[in-house]
Length: 277
Picture 1: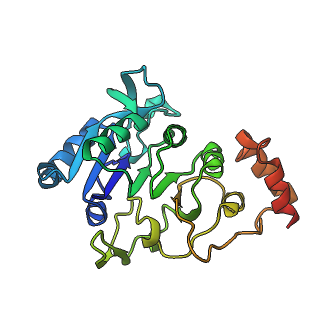
Picture 2: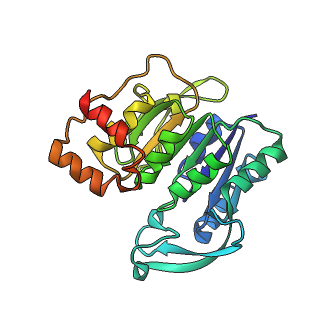
């Protein structure tokens, strides 16, 4: 049995794709309004036990039972636990749990040992969830995480994931007429919603890169709505990004100061090697 964990489900933009890829989808979403919409839109799948939706916020602190969640007044995909300007959000109190606790619970309940895919996309808290999962040795066959924070990159570099793809969320070429392989090894063509996370793993067009490519990629492209897709398999013919081609010496200092402040110490040697290649 294949299982997917959708952390930050929003409206369920990815569900129809996930149902093609796995036998059961476990989805977490803090926005109560969106959860109610999902329960109506996907009632058949919920009734058939193919979808479980939890109205919950995910945190690192196992001692907190409820937390304030902030719903964007203009765009629900921007809803977050950590708003920059609270005047642009509605506040809602929701229950909360650690992601690692919930994932272990469902793996035990369904007697599943391997996770097909974990999608992490919760505005402003991706690094907290990734850190929690890695600290608890929860590794999926495939994982994606949005790279808005330099600590996400540091965590990936220290992880045991071996192969990587980089996916700019606004790039619709990765979401239109994509050939995917279903859980039954059937080939299908899928079109994705513009706000979806798109395909994952081998379904993403293009080659995989090795771990040495992570830092050069983000030095060249900066942070933002860029999903890093990780595989725990070492793929054949991995490519390497060697050149920091858009960043001259002064530009590199800018990126180091403004994009990578959290791990300048731990990556000083890696950065030096990259610039000297």
